[in-house]
Every structure is written in structure tokens, then in C-alpha cells.
Length: 168
Image (tube, rainbow, N blue to C red):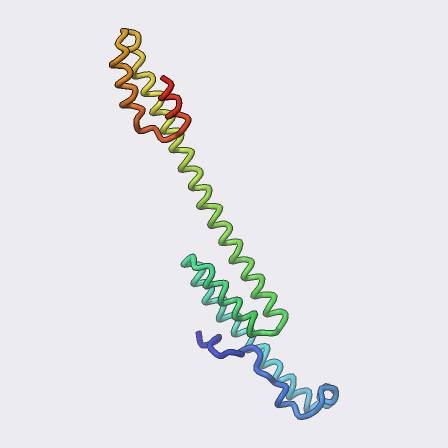
């Protein structure tokens, strides 16, 4: 980005250009207006750097490249010494962190839902296998019932259902 490509965009030093002591620069109208002009330039550069970083970070967040987004804001923090710009950049980093947490929570929830569904399907297969062999057991065809039950329960995925199938 052209905004953040220079090492010290935000902190272009205005002090070497001030030829008078700070105390007199603040009291003299001509010196203070020049210093005020230079300080407003620094503030504007910092605001521009933050705005550029924010635009780049938004693109990275949309692409779920959260660390790159945070790096843009960290660069602003490292190069801009203005407390309000630094505070805004830190707030944006916290917002990116919240988006990371939200994404991880959503992934965890999806994984838990998928596991819960797998367990329900496994329980259903176990119940169906048990019901399928009951008529064979009632007809005293134990060998055929055992083979059918083993075949129907071979694909069970949960430890609980595999253990129950092994006991029967």
C-alpha cells in the first residue's frame, strides 16, 4: 500500500524544522502557526495511514486472513505515535480477534453438531440391527441371528454401540 510503504509515515519528524525552543514556539504567533500546520500534517498522515490499513485489513478479514489484517493495524501502531490513532488500531485488532473467536466457535459448533448427528445415526443403525434379528431369535435360529447382527453392526462408529454389539 502506498500509504504504509514508507517506514515512518505517521511520525515525520517536525522537530528538526523548528528552529526555536518549544516554549517560545508556543507563545509566538508565527512560530506556533507553522508548528500547528506541521502537526496537523502529521495527524493527517497518521489518519491516512490508519484509513489505508483499515481498507486493507477489511479485505483480509473478508478473505479470513485474520493475521494479515492484524499485521496491517500493528504496522500503524508501530509507526504512528499518536495516541488516538494507536487506540483505534488496537480496537480494530480486538475486533479482528473477536471475529477469529466467532469463526472458531462456529467451526466447533458445526463439528459438535456433525458428531451429534453421527451418534444419532449410529444409534439408529444399532436399533435397526437389534430389531432385525429378533424374529430369527424367536425362531431359535441363533447362528443366523448372530451372523446377521455382526454384519449389520460392523459399521458402527461409536464405542458405546460397538461394545453393546460385542456383548450381544
